Length: 87
Length: 178
Image (cartoon, rainbow over all chains, first blue to last red; front, top):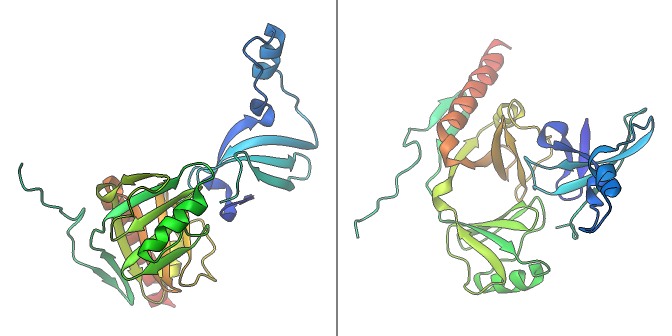
């Protein structure tokens, strides 16, 4: 498996660390109801198809990446840097 | 204040196996330059003073013995000198944190292929990569298609040397047997 890092180019899976669903980017506000926090922390879909998750380019440029991939075909559809800029 | 003497991490002789040579390179002054958000152009302008610019990802530049290497997102290492003062960037002296090895000769890429998860078939002078050497962090600087500088953490110098020695032995054994 390879991910095309927006900075480094195509790289081997072993350079990356998997964090979890991209849902972690949508942190509720401090006043949000317990239900919102419950959903943010615990409730995940398990789609057969397109899903998005966060990967860390640990042995590379150290960027956090949002990866769009298909769990059925194993296709990597997009890899985007979470922080702005592409340098 | 006592006189502090900079010592090499290994202090070993170069290792020759077949036509491949592994050497511990002399220590160079090493500064990390991390531009503050949105300041990359300003940093690049400031670096003009020493004839350099902030390098593009996966590249390095050189001028008058000073070298600047891209080492990660919004980070570059200046090797062999001191960066201009007052740049809008976080600048840290990391000279004592890294060890540099050189690996040269026909077959150097076959050695790296055993340890580094990169396709090095088309590398050229001016390429740089942040990657891994086994499980160790690596900054790979290409000086020619079969001539590389490898930087890893100084605390891992002996392990890096051992791993590369091992890979060199196997590559050389294969060559001798074929």
